[in-house]
Length: 205
Image (tube, rainbow, N blue to C red):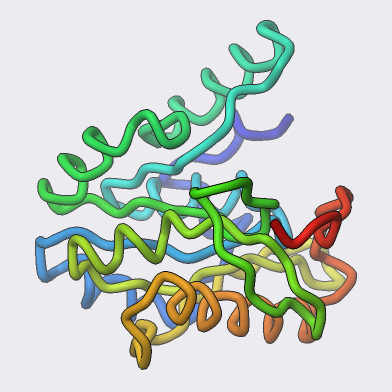
């Protein structure tokens, strides 16, 4: 609701970056970046902060069921120079965006269905997990930069970029497992800020 206050000039009042050199180095290669993230902290602010910092940024989203709310979200996001890709039907556009050197953020903590998913352990329990990021990373060879945001006790937000994922298994299952293990580490650091209320383990298929 306060997005209108956040601009390139005021960004530092709301957000402090940590490890941004990891993103900047990958982005400077001009071959596209895949940002691994989740519904931890204020993920809307995370996307806005990246784009307002000078990165050509995009996110993969699902349309909200209520049109008026979806229109509101679209307007807010696009006002911060964020390109929006709606689900798996936009793969061709995502590949084109990456080829142009852009950075695409993808969340991995949503339940996956059917052929779009793989089952990997998440906090010791099998969880059906979307494999789109793994497939894109293998297909494009774009670096995968983990990124998350958290709020401190003074209500200031911190955006953290970790070093690029070094893939040790080129299968979708192997890559998705590495991404999930990273997410577990973030939630352990900030368990109160993983705001995802659906049943993450509702099925393993």
